[in-house]
Amino acid sequence: MSASEHLQTLLANLPTRPGCYLMKNAAGEIIYVGKAINLRQRVRSYFHESGQTPKTRRMVREIADIEWIVVETELEALLLEMNLIKKHRPKYNVRLKDDKRYPYIKVHWADPFPKVTVTRQLVNDGSRYFGPYASAWAVHQTLDVLRRIFPYLTCDRPITGQDARPCLYYDIKLCAGPCIGAIDQAGYRQMIADLMNFLNGRGEEIIERLQKEMEQAAEALRFEKAARLRDQIQALQAVIEKQKITFGQDMADSDILAMARSDGEACVQVFFIRGGKLIGREYFVLENTAESEDAEILAQFLKQFYAEVPNIPEQLMLPQEIEEAQIISQWLRTRRGGEKVEIVVPRQGQAHELLKMALENAQETLNILKARWQADTHRQEEALTELQQALSLPHPPNRIECYDISNTQGMAIVGAMVVFEQGVPNKSLYRRFNIESVRGMPDDFASMEEMLRRRFRRWQVSQETAAQPGEKVDRAFAILPDLIVIDGGKGQLARAVKVLQEFSLYGQIPLIALAKQQEEIFFPERTESLLLPRTSPALYLLQRVRDEAHRFGLTAHRQRRKKLGMASQLEAIPGIGPTRRKALLRHFGSIEAIRQASIEELASVPGMTRAAAEQLKAHLE
Image (tube, rainbow, N blue to C red):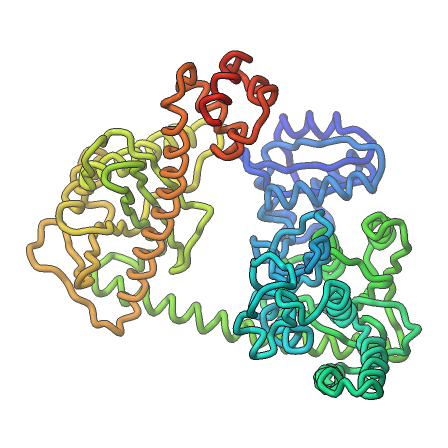
């Protein structure tokens, strides 16, 4: 493949050391991130015609620039590659499909009476984490079972054991009642420890101990306690019976991974084996896999999935060998506190049979997901086609932009712009506008005008920027919509028409307003409105777009109002002007944090002096 003079110069000067390389297109966007033991050898290989996949050839045609970062070892290169892919999400890298973090069960073990919650953030605060789960629904389904066996706390009341009466959850046996002393701290913590052991597949050990406690309670004529323990044992046994025994108790804890592929989609199924049992399974979908080898997809999954999970097992079982097995195993060992992690490919025996079962599950899951995606795509296409017909558009509105204004009596006015592509929201293209031209009394018409004017001014700038090689443009503004939806009535619509006329876009971009009361659709230069049937897919799509703009704008408005509220409290303090207010809020984040800071901490903020810090402290106290 031919390369430009600029690229030829870069290729000639590549180092022969380990590191990461970042491929960029003409707009300066990072389109691929990779790692190499020898950067020169690896990067140059992309520009050899023979043996390249169509995907690689397409990528190489887009490459306009290459950056690289040199490190000392291959392990450092692996860690850097994972961080760069997570940060930039390049379009040619294989990636886990969901942007969001996966949910986990969090046991707040550092608390005297630990609670059990759901979280997407792993924090090093002494808590124990279990998961990940493919969906929040799966987590809550698990917790519904756990809470009936281990009735943990869910309220925020201080636990003294001296409360006069418990809450309703105690009466319906969903809380052990430590607040009234029905269980002491040691007993409650033992119950939570049992919950964690159960999640780790150690159910038999718990049953054995509970049976001994039940027998002791019966011998001591404490029949109520014995009955409670009996019910807990039966509930545990009922759940354990559903877990398929896979190996003997001496078998290493393992994750078994299998992958299914079809029509450019890839689904990885993970079976979690703990204590000789299959305690759970989850599936994960990857994107950009259409022309990638199975081994590459598996390797990328391992690096992205196990970078997040809190617990690494002793063994990973894969359906095939991967090139990076040794370095990934070395990295996983560091994540496991220095304990060995094996990556194996079972060829026979029970492990091989379970791998086949995981593969069947992966294929079945992918088939179900594809059917769901196809149904969703059909509904979106139907809505877009109906919207095209109802609004007499030249083609289906594949990019819809909606605008809304949020304010409280003219304060903290925020304009919201949301973007739907192919009938689904693209949140990376959402933008908010802090309205500056309207002060005092609210004026939604003027606010809408300012927001739209700024949006299309940014479009003009992007056209000029795109003409300059190497300059990056903002996709939120660089592309014109196929339809603009204004949240409001004729007044807001008139201001939108005015702005489009200023930019010579009126008549080029279809424009409507959607009034919420009757869900009326207003058009420029038309007196009559349009009412779509209440069951119309097109109306449902417009409502989703409008409601999303309202939600996004309201969230941004609340955030801005909160910041302005904090700033206004500081305005009354002598010696704290706008620059210092901004610096203090940026540094501490809230009035409460400023109030709790010491004089030395306040004085250390850029622009502050000790005298100003002392005056601020005295005023706040």
